[in-house]
Amino acid sequence: MTLVIMAAGMGSRFGGLKQIEPVGPNGEFIIDYSIHDAIEAGFTKVVFIIKEENYDIFRDTIGKRIEGKIEVEYVFQDNQNVPGDIQIPAERVKPLGTGHALYSAIPAIHEPFAVISADDFYGKEPFFLLHDSLKRGETSVIGYAIGNTLTENGSVKRGVCFTSNGKVDRILESKVERRDGKIIGEPLNGEPAYEMAENHPVSMLMYGVQADILPFIQQDMEDFLKKNQADLSTCEYLLPDALSDYARKMQIDMKLLPTTAVWKGVTYASDLEELKSYIKGLIDEGEYPNSIYIR
Image 1 (cartoon, rainbow, N blue to C red):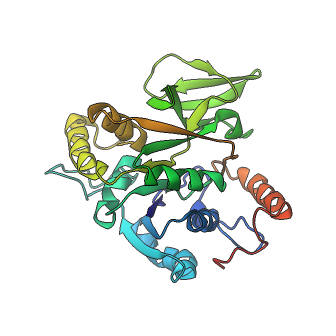
Image 2 (cartoon, rainbow, N blue to C red):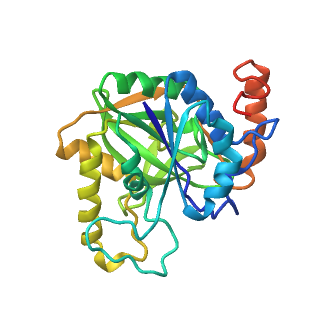
């Protein structure tokens, strides 16, 4: 079973490559904890999606530490690697989106897989939930309580889940923040703003997916780029949208897997110290050893 880690993001708001910013007491990265938890849950392979120019630093700082612990592959997210005869403007630097990241990994995926972001600290429980869900043949979304994912340092983007009967009907990408004691979501597609309860489920780019989605992604991305020919300098093919389309068109239930885990991320540089303190607390409670074995 494969863990796909999206690590090609530019981290522009953070001011650098936040995927390799130490957060643990012995220099551990966020990604170290994710891989540690995934191995414990039963995953046997990891695929890193990175920029080709970051290969050496990623291999030296992360890959070499885990080679021998789990099978490792690298794939490169390149804006010129797209289906069909689409021509992406050469001056575009920003990646084509999280859906394109998965498209880039298709040659390395041959089995059920989980997909996560390198930027995010997810906690242990969700990896076990995904592993068991994938064994059952499901496509699933880890649902965090929105109140467990917010930062006091500004607004954030979240994939807000709208559900019925334990399945996700829609994932609506929204800007979310607390305002006057309320949690307000503003859809990125221009729909009206809405209020959420503290426990409303949101996706933090943590999914369990069966391998039969991959041919769909190839065709769906080509259709998306053709539809957005006039906007190829800025448009993004987003994984939450692709999964929602896949579930709807293929009539597949996308299961919601609620978790009580607390998500932590580094959207802003000022979030870093909070994350370090949180991890130290988990170590003090015995959730993790002082130095995880990947080191």
